[in-house]
View 1 (cartoon, rainbow, N blue to C red):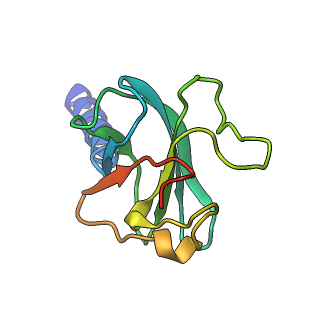
View 2 (view 1 turned 135 degrees about the horizontal axis):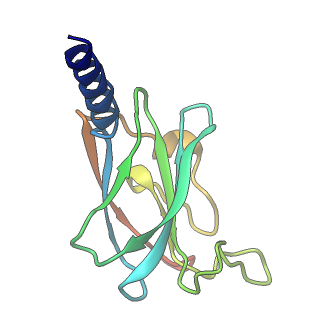
Length: 140
């Protein structure tokens, strides 16, 4: 009987951890300078607090990046192509990004960052699907 209880307990723990991983964002990203590449992402809550950030491989524009994350409220996503894989968004001498970047909800501002509320999207179901485009600072 003790073995049965232990097995049931273990299975409950396992199913709980698996279901926590069964939520997040499926992100399709187009516009990279080249594929495969490295994509940096930053998920931000409505108050501007970081929820999750990381670097992930981006195979091509047709294969989603799967980001496991629990989302209960609106959120914004900032992405950039880390083309030289140095772990940061490279900037030019006037402070403009020299690598391609993008914002959720299609938000864009020429030579600047859009207001955070413009980037916010609501989660949809267990997996929120987003399509984003990387742009250069000169795209408008």
